[in-house]
Image (cartoon, rainbow, N blue to C red; front, top):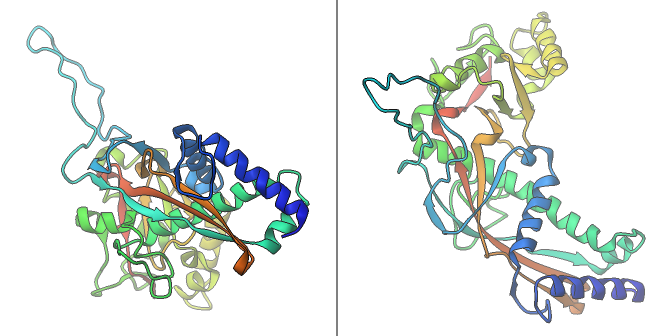
Length: 334
C-alpha cells in the first residue's frame, strides 16, 4: 500500500470508528442505529430494482410479517341505524406470513492495488462504501430470487447463485402458497409457449398469471412482471412460430419498445432464474433486517497485501401478501 493510500485508509478507519463510538475498527463492533440504517439504505439505492423493494428494520429475529400493504379493499358504507362501523383488519398477518432473520456475512477483500488505484478519486472513502454497497445489493437480489435453504456453512462452488445463504422470495411462494405457482401445463413439468403450446405467446401467459392473483389485485396499476431475460431473446421468440413466421419477432419488438407484456410492465431482474416469471408488485416483496445486528471489523492483512472488511447482518426475505403473487416456472418455447 502506498503512503498516500495508507494515510487515506487510516483516515477512513478513524472516521468509521468515530461514527460508531468505538476506539478501533480492528475488533468487532456493532454499528450505531443511524449508521446501520444509512448502510442498508446506501446498498438499496445502488440498484434500480432494489429501490422499489421494501427494506424493513425489525426488532425481533423472527415473527409475523410487518404487513407493509393492505391486502383487500377497505371502502364501504355502514347503515349505523342497524350496525356500528367495524374497521377490518386486512394486513394479512397470518401464520402463513412469518419471517426469520438469518445471519448473512458480507465479507470482502480489498487488495492494496485496488485501494492504491482509488486514491485518484477525491471521495476515496465513499468509493470504498459504494463498492461494498453495490455488491451487497446484487447479492441480496441473487439470494431473493434463488435462495432455497439456510446452510450452517455455505458453499459458493456448489451454490454459485447463493442458494444456501437464505430462503428467497420464490422459494417462500413455493413453500407457503403452492396454489400461486404454475409449473406444468398439458405436458408434465412444462409450461409451453408457442403456436402449439399451452399459451400462444408471452402476453397470453402473463394474462393467465394475472388471473392467479386475488381478484382485488388483478387490475392494480403497479403490477410488474419480473422475468428471465432469456425469455425475451429474439431467437427464443422467433423459434416459437418457425423461421418463416415473423409474428413473434414483431411481438418481441413491441415488448421491447413498449416495455409491456400482457399489458403489464416487465422488469429485467438481475439473477432471476431461467424459464420463470413472477407477477407481483415491487412493494409486495421485502427484505427484513434485524436492528442492531450490523457487526463489522476492518483488518489490515499485509501478509496477503489486502484489507479485509468483515460485515454481517441478520436478514429475512418476505412476501407481504401471497394473494398478490403468481409464479410461473418451467417455461419452454415450442
